[in-house]
Length: 342
Ligand SMILES: C[C@@](CO)(OP(=O)(O)O)[C@H](O)COP(=O)(O)OP(=O)(O)OC[C@H]1O[C@@H](n2ccc(N)nc2=O)[C@H](O)[C@@H]1O
Ligand SMILES: Nc1ncnc2c1ncn2[C@@H]1O[C@H](COP(=O)(O)OP(=O)(O)O)[C@@H](O)[C@H]1O
Image (cartoon, rainbow, N blue to C red):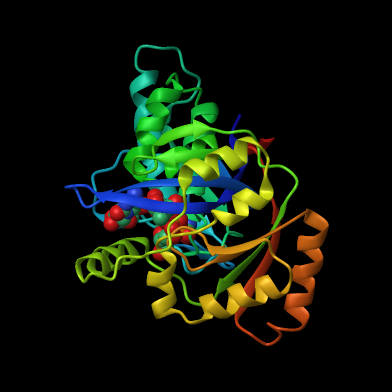
């Protein structure tokens, strides 16, 4: 097998509460995470060293940059190729970091075995076809990283268990362990304590992403400042009620708890959040809330057909000639899946 292709699914946060700030700056949170059927397409490819183009090679819309440009100690080049001009193509790409961990792991586990690949003779190309909006609170980069971890384990037949893979995932970012698991899940800790819940079936989502994205770190910083100034967000979800509602498949009760404590912070910077929520409610959404640290907002609709027709109407009417992206999506019970071996 020379390559593996995977879908890396986006997530939304249904309800997000923050309980504490840890000494390392991370925040303890509670949130229901839900995978949605909007995916980046990831291909991990083995390349013979000689077949690799020179550093900084530009082909079509794709840019390849080798990690030797990053100045870090490396063994084996990793190339990021993407149709999205906005995401990093070097060691700053989280998919790159995942590939580096797994390539090193492959080399360690190859020692003393009769493995087919001569790892010193190959480079890795990670191709990312981006569909998940960036800086949306939809975990796009985290999903890409999780797919690379899972894909490389299979491609190189690396003998590591799920526990170690989850550890690697957490070292990459707070959302990555969830993206390895996917589906309907209660996440706590900084995101790594994962409790599987029954699939939230039946409903549909309309997701609206304003043109401007949000940096997760900046939003958590502002949240801290707002607390310090006595502006503590008053609207909080009751996560216990939310969890119970998911278990009972009670979509009305789920909708009542779809509240995100980071939303008011982002809405101060982006007035569009309020406008988008109103438009979703006017369309009959059972709830409308920002996902993660923003800037995308989702509406919960009673079924997928209603979500699709509402998204169509919003595109043609309220948001016509407006710089927002409108997506209708259903839920899915996984974070990633392999769709091709090559
Ligand atoms: C807020 C959430 C909710 O699902 O989603 P996004 O909006 O990013 O999609 C996540 O907790 C984001 O997870 P992730 O995007 O992986 O965060 P990381 O890269 O690990 O951290 C980026 C920065 O966010 C802050 N951070 C992140 C997670 C967390 N529980 N507490 C934090 O304080 C830290 O300042 C950190 O430096
Ligand atoms: N594979 C990737 N896909 C998207 N963004 C990436 C990727 N690798 C690194 N990034 C950087 O991570 C930041 C956060 O991106 P993203 O994962 O979309 O955030 P969020 O989870 O908040 O939606 C972006 O500013 C982007 O430059």
